[in-house]
Length: 96
Image (cartoon, rainbow, N blue to C red):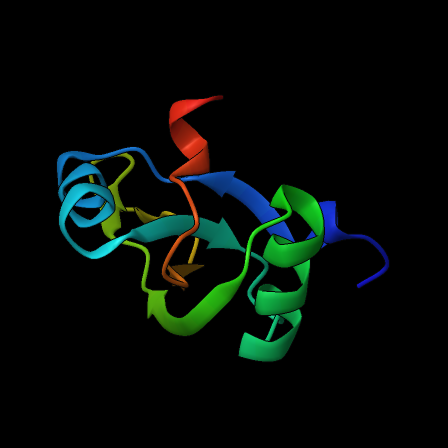
């Protein structure tokens, strides 16, 4: 992991993530599957200039898809991070 852009891939903008932003001051990101919580916290603080209170991560297993009659494919596995911002920090994704 060289840069913060290798760790933080993109924000996840879904109905659930928008609800978390409004109610719990939590932002959801897709992150590198090898990144740990400390690396994610440092990357978000450095990239967006905010203070992070807590980071929770989860692995999302890719779904199996039928590709042909008999063959089965699979979508990629990825990692999701729920980043809770400290009190007083504004929601920076509204500005993006």
